[in-house]
Structures are given as structure tokens and as C-alpha cells.
Image (tube, rainbow, N blue to C red; front, side):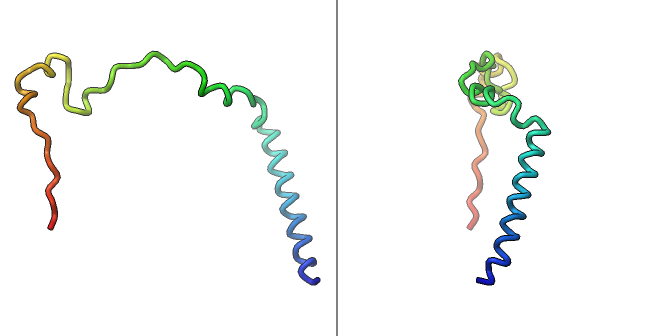
Length: 81
């Protein structure tokens, strides 16, 4: 029965914190636009951009067809014993 002397004030403290967080969110316009975030995944994206070829070592379209690109090798990770 003595645990109620601890639990009731702790519960009231948690409720007061929750109320304070709620009013903070209302004052900082957290609930202003509730519809747009739900619709954003359904909206069309911008037109697709061509893939970035610099990450694979191709700098322009002419170098992709050059014979030197056919002899290019990738480094294999060395196996450690």
C-alpha cells in the first residue's frame, strides 16, 4: 500500500510532462499541416536524371566506347590469412 505514495506523484509528473509536450507542439505549429505528409509518397517525382557514371570510372560517353575501357580491370580485395 505504501507504493501508492510513490506511484501517484510519479504518474502525476508524467501526465504534467505529457501535457507540457503537447502544448509545446501546438505552439510550434507541429499540427498545422496534417494532410501533406500523407500525400507526399503518392506525388510524382521530378523527371529522372541520367545515372552518375563518374562513380564507375566513366567520365563521358566517348570514353565508354574506347578500347582502353575494355582492358580496364577492377581491383580484387586481397584475402588475409
